[in-house]
Image (cartoon, rainbow, N blue to C red; front, side, top):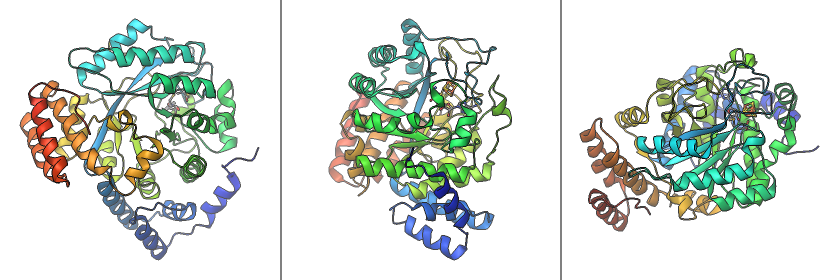
Length: 456
Ligand code: SAM
Ligand code: SF4
């Protein structure tokens, strides 16, 4: 089948993109105009192995990140619903042939407890994660979404629910849209067909094309915020980055809007999944930094997501290079928040609590954001990009980040309260519109007086 992923073309682009400093400097200059990069330009930067020049790429990525996202870092938590899986992905602890894994699908009562536990930490954005199987069908997911939005513990409330679960039919996607999902996230794992076949020997996931076109169906169903990803370590990272761009270009050409986010998971050790202990194409830390920085240059307006698969120190470093959203305080086993430990899907490297992550982010000069405003105001898909590209979204983002952060400070945060308060006072000066600044100041006061959930 002819698809938008052409293995031969991608490999040819990689082998022909000979790195030279002069060419790379021209590409960086183009990237700084925030117009993104072509496949050829991206390949040339990915072929840079000169540590000295990589610093120039990192510097450009830092500047672009700063211009588009400012100091904001969006925080979320995954909520694992089920690890009962019919697939046998060789790298995943949930694979069907892993007989050592205790299997579990959360009941609705257990989900309520998980959501309460997450709310008590201060989370406002959840990513529901499910293995593929009879337990995780649309009926179940629909009910889960309803429950998550309804649970209210103390001052807690989940305001945006995203999903990472197996591809659905058009009709099923429409049902999830109606139930109120934000982003539909699905990782292709590897865009290299042959490797895909080897890694997914059994079950519905072995259909490469079905997975590849899942985002088209989601878009057709009206879910216009979709999140792509590749699992780094399965095949040549340069191939995967170019293929992610092909996927983004395909969506942009067909639906007028590219992916809302791109995730960059890197394989972590998982029990009962030998490939995860010895990935075929391990990605080194320096190469992983290059992946993040080059993606930031290539798709400047696409959110880049990094999870707790990476260590705390490395995540802090990658935040500066282009990551805009991170998970915090995560558990990757169903029931992990309310009950605690069992083996997860893979081992988590960053075990900091949400509060510790927030503390570290503040110390680095970033502003933690729990904002969910765009989705609730209908600024999704093309509407979001129309605002984001000329920079107009900034008028909302910084005030919303400050308002949600202030809420978090008032309701949950115990450590460093003075430092955190000083950050809000300082950053408010960065709001360029006098009218929005005035309203933000008034709303910050209202929050102190007990009002909640104020946003632009
Ligand atoms: N079951 C659904 C699927 O496969 O699309 C969604 C949930 S799956 C639990 C979420 C993602 O976890 C997968 O898409 C894969 O990229 C990632 N993953 C699986 N095993 C991993 C490992 N050992 N290390 C890091 N990430 C892993
Ligand atoms: Fe199942 Fe997803 Fe894990 Fe594959 S990656 S075994 S589909 S949970």
